[in-house]
Image (cartoon, rainbow, N blue to C red):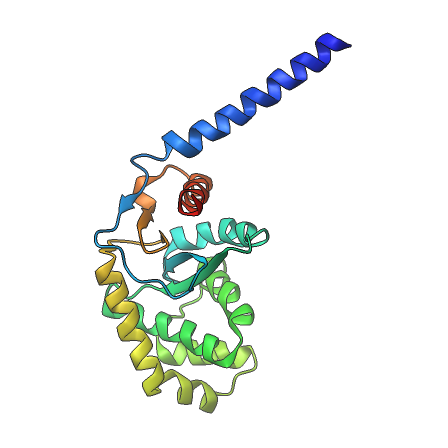
Length: 207
């Protein structure tokens, strides 16, 4: 019995050391240091910012990993989604996200819009197509157009464009931790790894 207890303790110790080694060493080369660091929006909390595009299949594949991670979001971490504006063709989707955010219906629109484009293969890339999609989810065409073409959204689109520029983003999905570290899809092998590197950098910020 004693031998079994000793073996169990040894196994758990090895498991802990393995996880610690990943946290402390194995993340090197899997992120980029942002220089200079960029200001965050979340006060004393550690900010994790995801930049995405609804038309991106990789962002769609990453979404379930983000959703699972958010289920146990620590109290000292704040999560922000930012739609990518890396070219003009992405603007309608960025405006759609900010319209949903302004109307308080991101939970009703965000994943369903991803699913509609990538699972159902619907063409939802223009303002008119997106307006029809919002109507299907209870938003009148008048309300959609009022918000979608407002000055407030124009400002948010400019801010998203400058954010992508300041972080020197070249693609999505990308994750930024506390304005200091950029994790891009090209630096990691799997989206599980993207989450693990994010968690390791969060821990680094705590220290």
